[in-house]
Image (cartoon, rainbow, N blue to C red; front, side, top):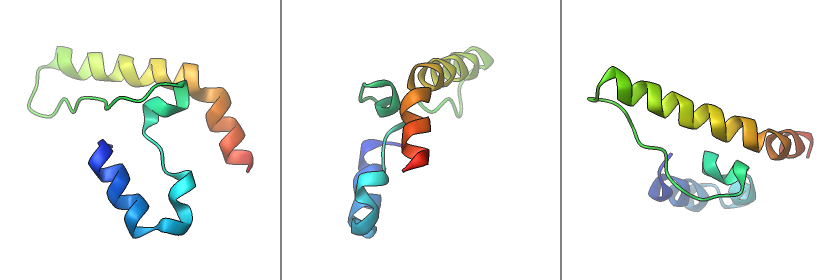
Length: 68
């Protein structure tokens, strides 16, 4: 998800705004993950690795938020 998509969702669903995050925010950062569509297999692999790293680092926060 891109920042503008996040903000659009928060505007459309203000009661749920506190539950809308960029995936990177789960790992204590705030950046968009590049979309590999139209790229090479290496681009897809790099994006997959990036997502995997974020999930590993952000799992405690994801787990905590899922319990709320």
